[in-house]
Image 1: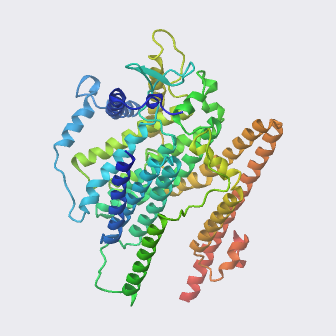
Image 2: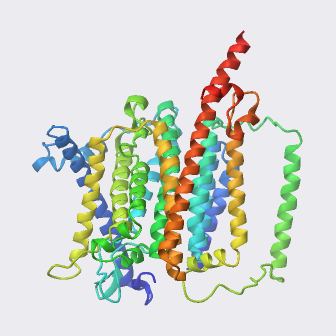
Image 3: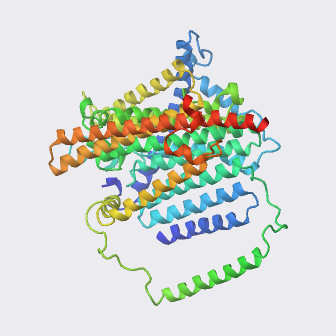
Length: 190
Length: 405
């Protein structure tokens, strides 16, 4: 049963991944990426990582790829690219070299994995015992890893504020004044 | 916990019960869509002093069926500049999430007794819902984020500018309101202590004052209802289909059965959202068992509560004018999201106070003070932002004039 699920979703994941790089239209590529993400979500469910699967769909498929599509559609790059032209010189040979190195790395890892276990054990032992998957996850996040968790959220807040700052286009040539919370000199009539 | 149906392994009876549940849920949803479209047209007719559909069948009740058959036999047009594959795919991307969300709604089951939410079918105990996944209500959020694709791709693949504008509006609106929706859901999950819809219903009592509506103190319910209406693109948040501005919205170029599929998805979503509201906040199928067999009453209570919300959606459409786009975004980002976030914090504080045995009133006072302070800060930030925006505009004009001079 598990093998069947794995094989089917592996085919979906690989087909999607190939589609991402082979499709000529960027929107089709993005859709293929969604297919890959769904395949991975199915694999997560097969491993009983239900929460991870849900988050995969909500965050990656639901937010990130939607954002990709937004950019593709609004910037008007949703047309097929001319593959003959090479905008960046020497990019293709470099990509080929990197691809061969990456593939070699994966093959070596795959061969070595049979002899050496790669995944380190959790220092706190397995998250076993009563309670659901999600309860365990929440407990780990809010007790042992609470500082990492909080640091990540602070990082995200910083990213949001940075994005807002960058996205604002003040028409005033002296932009710094706007962000101190006080209007510029000529804005006294507010 | 999970569905007790699968506790003793899977055999033929179990498979047949599951197939039966899927078929019944699908049929129920289809019938309720047929009913809902007729009900909406008839009720709006009444509210606007018209008669409404009255030709097909008694009181025009077969009108939807007639419309469906008509749409089936119309010509299926595909625009010249359309992206054919995506154009054909989009209606299904709308339809499938609409149905999948309904599968987690418990529509019946006896919640009194030691095994809550079960009924016995063919000697097997099971929940009266198609699936009770461990992630429960997260399915709603996952599916509502997938539903964005249907709308977005339909508009884009039409190869025409009005549908594209409509779909960009729609996806921006749906993505914005999803945040408020999930925060309202988080309040319920916090108080119920579980993501499973069945447990959420089981944690609520039979009596109205034991429902989550009062457990979470009304605010998340209101937020959820508003965000849900926006998520459905229903009036007064139907900028997506503002026919005065956009011809017809994201489905302008669609015809025949594909157009029907979009409408089917829209009304399925309406019914599903009402069902989710009932499940999360109004005790789902819970209610007093008056007489007769005890499995009979929960579905009746469920349908009655569902009907209240279906009526509410139609009522909103008949009475409220459409929001302007900036008003829509202001409501979502500056009111609903901060409000539900603040409320979630207050609820969490109360929850911690209960667990740690602190003085609940002191905690409540501190939490409310924090909420008010945060609200004041937010208001100040919004004011400053608007003032800077305005003065920036004035400065911009001045500079442009100087450049011209």
